[in-house]
Image 1 (cartoon, rainbow, N blue to C red):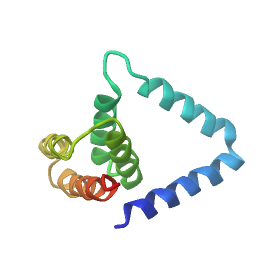
Image 2: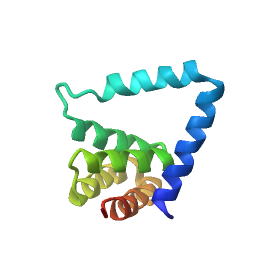
Image 3: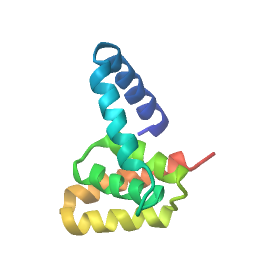
Length: 112
């Protein structure tokens, strides 16, 4: 999978939705900003948690967006791999399959 293309398409779809339902889009953005603001947990920790949930919920776009944000927050490949391991322990084979997608995303998106 080409993760840059996947995220570009997802972003375009989000923008198209926001044109017809801006209050809902704005509401989600407000929740996102509030939840991801550093507090007792820093930005990297929150992105790794969000990634784990994306893997668990089998959301490819969530995986991509949160891998990218985790990289921007300073996450390493080893940290992503450990998140995948915890997801596998909790979610078995499906988490394994979506987890390896997260590692693939890291490998593509960490290249700058």
